Image (cartoon, rainbow, N blue to C red; front, side):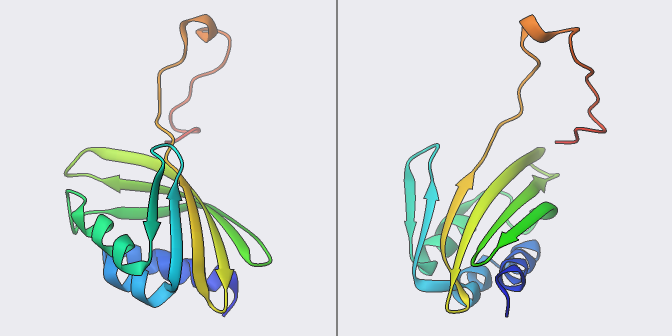
Length: 133
């Protein structure tokens, strides 16, 4: 499988909220996940499955691919992750590193939306449909 197929297989498992399959099928035993904004480190598929299964709203998570870029063993995805019940819609930028047919490392950035700063109001167009979060 190509790195792109591996990453898309991972997101397919996430789409059906099968976090155990996402972890154990697609991640290497020495997987490392990094969440730089909180300095959290996920070591191994079991830890990945555990943290994702602990999220509120289990079973209702949606994962929509906004963009995917691949360059050799590195794949970058921009996903919209949402849960209607919890009224959550967020973007996740993930750098996936692939080796020997598995994801060995992910670095994820979870940017939050925020209002236009006061100093920029009126300078740029604001269009929520075009710039859909």
